[in-house]
Length: 187
Image 1 (spheres, rainbow, N blue to C red):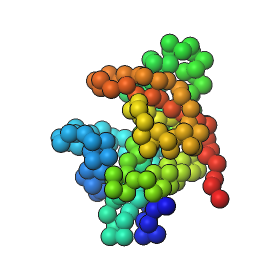
Image 2 (tube, rainbow, N blue to C red):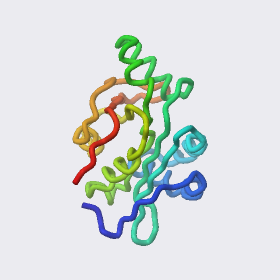
Image 3 (cartoon, rainbow, N blue to C red):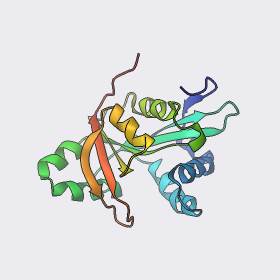
């Protein structure tokens, strides 16, 4: 379990903007992306914070530094990710696309500093983010291959929606995973 000094807080869009550099540093570190990736992602993350239903949960260490972050928003037609996934699902038939894409919350980003991984911070972030979300489903994309994230998603009941999918501009295969909401509470 994570340290008793870990604190969770819902960030407003202004607080998110204030902590953007710190959040992007975690993203680059956790995803092992090359230097320079943060500058490319910053405008996109700021735009995400303006979307309908946007929510952000932060995990903060004893010294109030960011150790993890999760955010998402209500997915809608016309959004890049929605259109990419819709195109991939069309090959599975309109029924699959309609089932998953009519009413969903997009879990856009969830990242924990590598040194803080494996202690439950990611699960707490995910559960807190999805608490009180009114959408019927949650969807996310994650790189294919074994990881702590995969284990977490499977443990929480996420199922395959689309596998080995290639997003435009990224050579890596991704899985689209989803599950109905709400998540069950743990006791």
